[in-house]
Length: 436
Image (cartoon, rainbow, N blue to C red; front, side, top):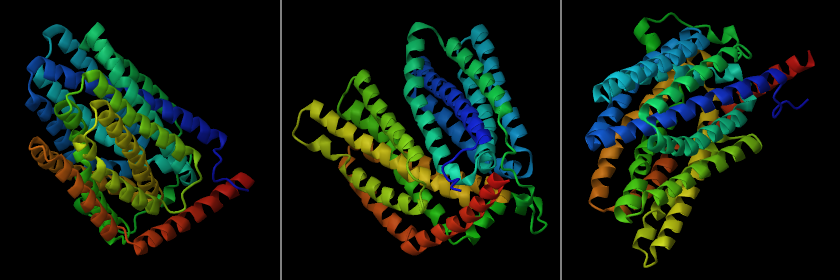
């Protein structure tokens, strides 16, 4: 009996709850982030004040993630998630009450950012490491596709909603909406069955370790793996070059082309639309036999698109044509990036042993996150000098070089063998349960 594409009744219920929970949280987070960024700039007029908020977010994540991975592997993931998700709306409720009584306060915002980032590190890592216990590993591609589509949809609707509410009401209303959505998400997560595919034997330790060695077991596992080790190098370089896209669109659209905010909003909506198209497609297509190969192909396509990004700026065409060309490139890039990232996450979820999954995922996040601020600073400097073509052309070429060196065919075949071995076992277990 073929069970690969079939969710059983309990898994369908888990999927329904999970998507609603992530949808509510993603919508609330996007609204909150947009509103806070807007009010910081509106109240202070300082880009530095917004940058400090980003620095707080990054530093807290880098400090907390190793401990978040350790806690996720050692303790009950559902309890960690529920406690963390309860803290967030309570903290935002406190900020709401403070703001209503004392007005907008930058220090309070930074403190709240630090606390919510702390809880998010633990909640996010615990949820990621619990995915193959909530869902069958054979269904990871579909789950990731549906999840990404919900997140992308939230990224379109939430900022637009927050922008409208800012004009009609106040920051306090947006904070109130976040609090309500946060408590709703907690209630939904209480119902999710985190033990549906739980196997206690997967957590058996092979040796006694000191606390520090146990904490760093994720890094040790990566270094011992012939597949994960080069993948980490790949992720570090790709995230460095990807940091260009965090500042390039706004720099080109607003500063270079001088577009109005409405037009910029439409272009950003096109980017999110590309992510939705790709995510829905991923959920519907046949399961990938070799996810890492898909990542390699899409990385090379992204490199090609990256080299073309600056071309429309220098073409002797009208502003409208330039905007259409840039939007088309951004749309293609968003689709390709989703097809690049999702297979990688599917591989990680399937191939990383459950007993160290939290710690390995936290190390992967740290490796990726640590280089992005450096990339933003470097690219920001060159874009301020109007080196658009040079920045995108060199970055595209370097991505090609990194991909060819870190993802050779031997590694791709090795990763496929690992996936095949794990999924064969998973499939046989699933089919035996169905027969019973």
